[in-house]
Image (tube, rainbow, N blue to C red; front, side, top):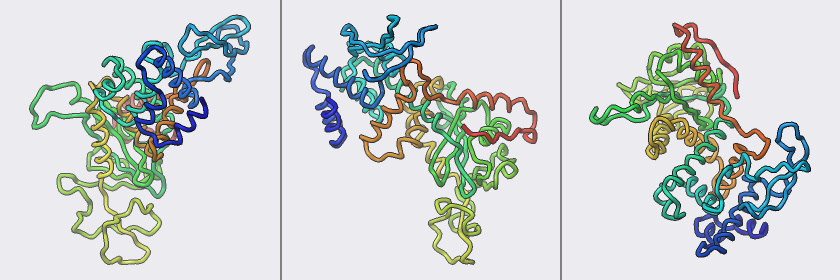
Length: 393
């Protein structure tokens, strides 16, 4: 089977090759074979443990070593057992925990993962896998949960001495022309930023847009030596004190500062990374040691469009953090690999990081830490008293 898996992974990764590897499901025997192939593929990526894994018994007071024992009564075909006859499912604390594999099949789960990675609509996934709508919705949610945990677990402060980070806040949605029902969405703000150098992003929902809320978040997620670009919202007034500099743009006047028809600002060469410079400027340079720059927030505005494209598939503010996590994972992590096969393998292994199996602790989302910081900051009555947080994850 391992040879077939390697042969499959060396082929161009597409739905046809995936279906050919998993096989058809026309009768009971073929469904069992497809399920077994799905299990073997997930074991290959350590999404679920294989028989060679040995763990310590997780039952209280028993630290004996557990090994694999065959058990044909379960779909995986084996379970963990210790000499004291304690038994644990092979899928305990994994992506398949409490999943009825005989009903859905590991092969269908593999297909769902592939469709979610390609951002296929639910209707397409339902039609291809022949599963119920509620089941498809649940598995897409499980995938977003993994993406959120891994995205925040991997996250490190963005920015740096030569970098510019653009920050902005946006509504998740709004009524067009002020027509339509008032919903909870219109009270939900999202605040975030993006690095012009690394293209990394972060975002989180916020209760309000006050300085006491936004500035501690910036200090948590952005390196203090970073130059900040923003609009002229008054909450950013202290950025010059908390970071290495602050440039603003007045969106009621223009989207660039200075405007495209005006001369750019000139900075010493080496002050900023080349990705931060005004590459469109081709006029005369006043000094060979000076480089052009303009203040704008066009990159974060573009990222908001990408985020809201994902949000269109959502169903309310309850799952806002999950969709933000998915957007961060796709932007910060999946974008670093080029091929579909590499993205598929990366996500399957990230599933194992989020749900590593019996007795192991998976990747955690530090959103609780962020909420604690935002809550503590709200106690301050003026922006001048905002504490400085320089810790990173």
